[in-house]
Image: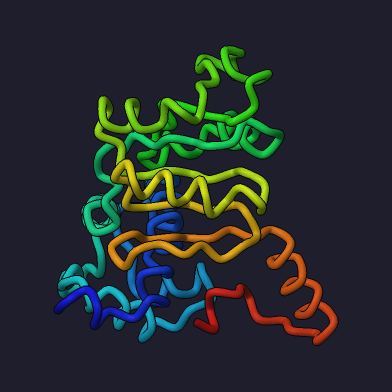
Length: 218
């Protein structure tokens, strides 16, 4: 099946399946059924089977899914079965928090360089990494063959920085600025708008929505 034929919600749910399977693995669980995996996340067993079927046949008759095997397969599908180097643009409060988060490396992403346009921040260390000038993005991206970046800059600077990232060959941008970015069709942007998520949470609380999770309705 071609990538464009796979619904985005199914791809989105893969991350939740993987997270739950890793939890089962930590609990020394070796096999799992689609019903048990679905119940843990608030999905039906039919939804689990349908989502996984887009990517292959992973179940075993009379056994269900082997947890270790399915973890490996989902990581391969998501491209997280190997470490990917990531650059971070923005050394403000959000950038510092992102750099301090240890969960990225556990999921296969390693922040290897941080950049900022503020000359007062350049040269200072955040953890083990020195803050570099944004003028160094091109050389570092080329040297380390980086194709993925996180953008934690003010709204006013987001598009110009995105343009710079595209120019140096970045193909995937995780955007924390609350603004839509205009990028070429071969560049993927995933936006994280924390205020928007709180708005949605507030709406669902006001509505009295008791569904188990927002992704269950996708």
